[in-house]
Length: 117
Image (cartoon, rainbow, N blue to C red; front, side, top):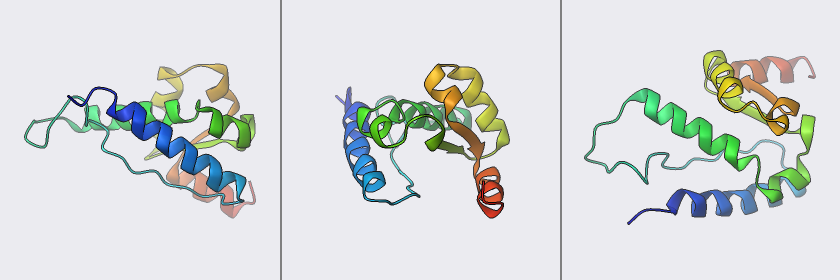
């Protein structure tokens, strides 16, 4: 089966992202198949299922030791598709690690970066 596939992908992504951040790369995008453990290419799924899976993967990735060690607290930015998704992420994942991070939308991140924020 495909059980554990996302954890394996997350661990590999954490190692690569952690190394990239340690090397001074500040902008990283991780692409992955969010429903690989629960759906096949032939199954129907909703946009909401995919967005929720993307959110959960991204937020769980932020907990990996390789990420925490190079992007503690306010240095970590979690960027979601839009402001609504960022709000849903804050509601679904209220923990301290996420509250310390900047959680925003892609457009919000671009706006903040343009202002030097």
